[in-house]
Length: 517
Image (cartoon, rainbow, N blue to C red; front, side, top):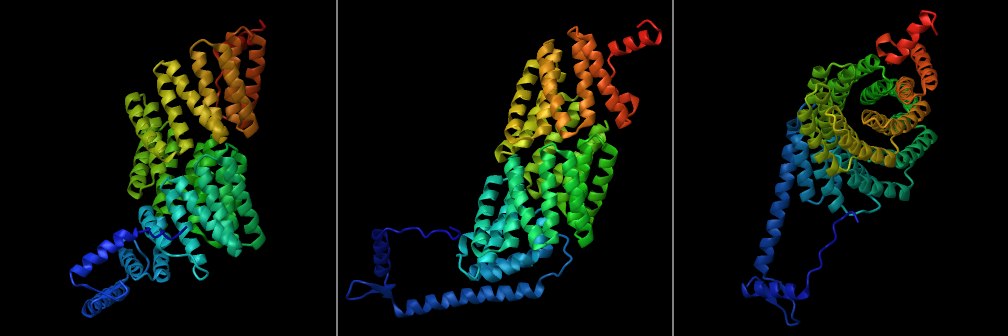
């Protein structure tokens, strides 16, 4: 299953080839109808094989003597190790090949050289036959291959290899490895938008890590669970997991883990509308990723900074960050990251009113994201396209995109995405004058905001509902609903300019102040 199966060659074909070699006087035919090499030919073949093996050994010795020690900055700095790996594979010395690539595995991973990692580990898992002596190393190769495919956005392929790795670890009872594999599978399912399945794997991973007392493993499991809850729109719970994870990473001095936690804490605050705090976390994260040379992390932090500036209305600044992020993701072959960056650029240009340019970016994003079946990002891109057509006054087309995005978000259980789609559908029906349908969508939206604890979202939904109640003649219900919203905004201590007080409410307030209520 891990080594390639030998092709079955038909006997008639073999016989024909042997006869051809006999006719060329390269083989002798024995009395029992069998063939063997002419003595001189056999001697030559053996010498050739010896010469080739000797050449590979000399190449290994040469590259070993010239291999650059850490720290490394570029791919050329680890080129010697890649050459040594190749020559060991040619000699079928896969154990040594594995040990060689592990020397620079972390560097290649941090710098985002996922296509190279796929190439080397594919060779190992295809040619290295599983036996009792190499179980752990072959399992580690399958894990690295799965992680590389996940980074490239090829999630189904990642899951297949990670499942194989998990199976080996379960057979030999390697609990730490089992926990790691469960965590990696959880991440892959999270990337696919299958959040419930992701959470189950991650909870199992955390439980094992806690039982064996592996602090780094516990921190990773908490971090991954934070990501899963963030994807589900449960931001408070996500923040708690990331805070716990950050504390452990800081105690053990794991800089990459610290940077990742800071990044995701920023995302949690961003989702809660606390953009200034989010930006501070993103900046700290970016600085660490730059110091350790983690290109994927750098690209992610740049993209998140773009999101923060976009939320603050600084669209040109956001675009600059998105462009930098896109360039890195494209260079390292991270298709999901590139698709997300293109979608973000579409959002920013939409905010600037450059709708055709925005549509172009969204369409480019869809091409990539549909190829890798990244359902969450596909849904976000469809949302963006819906927003464009909504701005253009083409409400029916906008509704079609919103319905598609809502369906995907519901299928993957992304509550934040469901909320956004419902809100946009409510607004589109409001623009069409179909107020009752708008109210129904916004009531569903309000319920989700209340469940996930998004107080600002809850207040905005209440204000929008209040305006719709007024339009449909339910003035008293509108007043009560708007009062609820005002109470929440006061509790949040938000500035007055974010209070969406409708004109009819202001009129009522004026009458009240004049004593004409």
